[in-house]
Image (cartoon, rainbow, N blue to C red; front, side, top):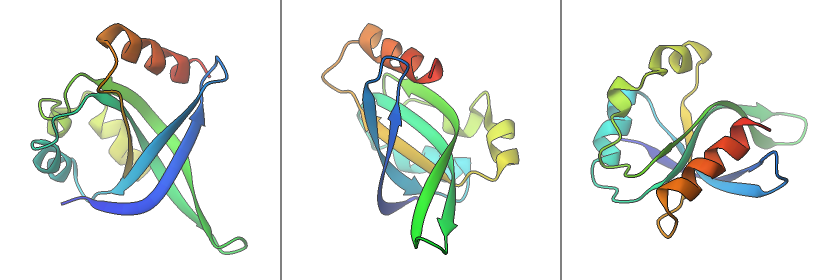
Length: 117
């Protein structure tokens, strides 16, 4: 099961637009698959490496992979095409930015905006 981290992570796209992700911690990709099977939303997602700063007492996130899906219920995270690379980074957090009210084309443009930043 994944856990709500009570954190937001903001990313800025090449356009200057800011995207806010709600952050969750997870243990394995299979846990993601199990959790999102009951999550009927579309959106962007970002896998991050979560770091704690003893100096500031704040967690920061380093993006590892940005993607998008038309439906989290059917997105097969357990067979994600970049799973091995993401796991190799030690990433155990995922951010979700819901886009339910947007078209597929607009969501893909948002993903491109983030990838080009």
